[in-house]
Image (cartoon, rainbow over all chains, first blue to last red; front, side, top):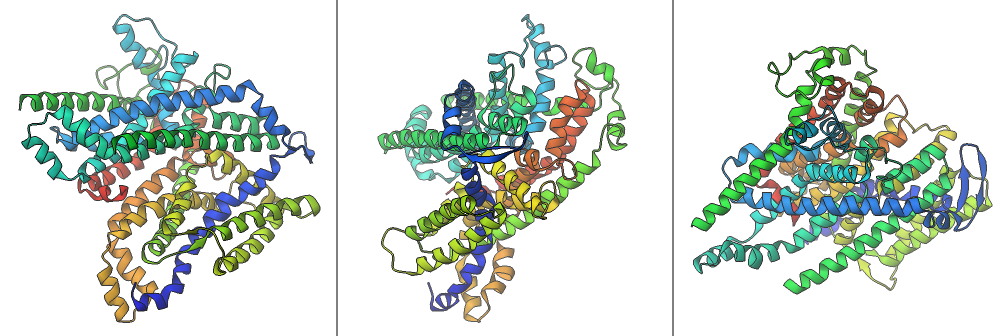
Length: 295
Length: 339
């Protein structure tokens, strides 16, 4: 750093503090309050004065089957959709990278889904998967299958939610993997081609290992985002039938805003945070072992 | 070469299948918006003029306000998302610039001290005094922050965090499930309302939340864009004794314009589509489009033409965003942002 830069160093605070303060005050400080509330019984309806109950809220949630059910549902939808997104997104990126004819035609259509409101996507899905008036069942009837109640039974509903998430977020994987592919050094591929190494071995021997760190990051982002799923579930099934498709965020929302049991909901959202951290750590540890095997 | 041709065919096939899969729902919502009621209720219809006679009735109904207020949520969505995007991209760019051009050293112990003082202090104030929650939080903040800054200047033992850690701190805000902070913000906003500062269901309250929500993206993306801005021009300006602020506004910002546009588009899309915070923090006046959309579902049942119009209104601006980013993707601009 030059001498004049050192002299003006103080100004760096002016640059960073506004952003720092906003994130601190809006994102982190309310958590302190929520943490305190999570050890209390606070109800708005009927109003009761706050009472300290220690870990009771946490114990109550951890022993409820609905909580574990919500974790299972969320993890299942996320696992299904992220696997599909990664495989499809990577394949599409490879195709686009190798200049498939008409690439410019696909670009906007491929990108668009990830910029749409998940609520809007869910509304469209509701029409498309409608048991009598929707085109999917129409096509299935045309192929000789029976009408399928996609949204009112547990397993079809979970599959539909995973398909929607895949539809919406595969573009994200494609976008990043394509950027990764474009950043790879061309010389290695030239050399491999000169040595007459087949496409299959080129992919597994060069492309895949070189993009492994990026893949780990992309999947991580999608896992974290996937765990937050509420919008589509809220509109499509409302968590039903019963609580069969209830995800963690929806569970927290239902507890907090239908029953107005604030202490319990705060505790629930912190448990949710712990679940995300546990899943994230397990994933990163596994990914690290995989990366090391290739390195 | 035969092997390659086979692979290319498979790639093309995959792209075409995906194109159909990606485009069909969009086509469906587009044509449904022009369908008369009978074309919906008598089973699926696909092609306008062949299967049904298109009509603009659903659009007329929507904008005449026959089906609830459409204009209100549109206006509040535009105001809130544009303001929040401008603010977070601007502040995020400033922070990113600081992270690229200066070095920060933050002692871990000072950070720990900050956390301990603020959490412990708040619990004490909450238990021992009758202070309102916002007041107590404010007191804790103005005590803990100077103490932490002062401690950071001392020669404390323990690890020292650098610029990458500060960036990670910003980005890590995205790891939190939003329900955790959304719920906490709801509680806090409700408390603020009690002391005479209404934030629930107000323009200000929404903009603050969405600015904070967009900042992690803005800092992360702009940091990568700013590293590609050449240092020499700035150094030349500094030799001429031009102040940092002027350098930032007159040299750095114009040079980073493509990055600014790309980042703004991404932040705008996230704010425009955001559902959870809007669901918790608005009740009427400042409801945004996603909330209106979610409401369509229960209030409309199978009136698909009306639902499609609402969905199209929310989709429209995003088509533009995707088109702009698609152009940038072609020019290889985004490949820099993943390193």
